[in-house]
Length: 107
Image (cartoon, rainbow, N blue to C red):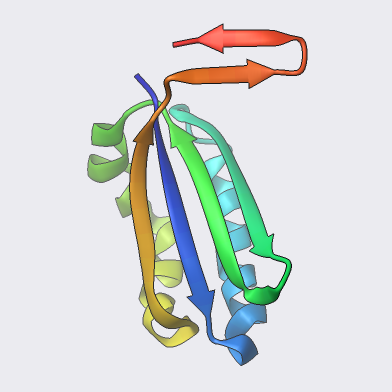
């Protein structure tokens, strides 16, 4: 069963461009991973340096054992302490129902 991670970031305002550059590189590389389903990045309309990312993968074990250790993530993970105003918040979710414009998909 797929797993979705919701990750909230509070980026240091003058570090937002660097953060986005690193994160965009990770998101671009993730698309080629066979167990990747989707990702979407959101920005708080009232606070442009507050972001929320959700990403869905086929397997939590794969994420822990393989994905988090991919070389394309290294620079991003190493830079987070200087780029974030506070530690990121990560929560894990499992799908119960997915709706599409033309119908519902049940899991």
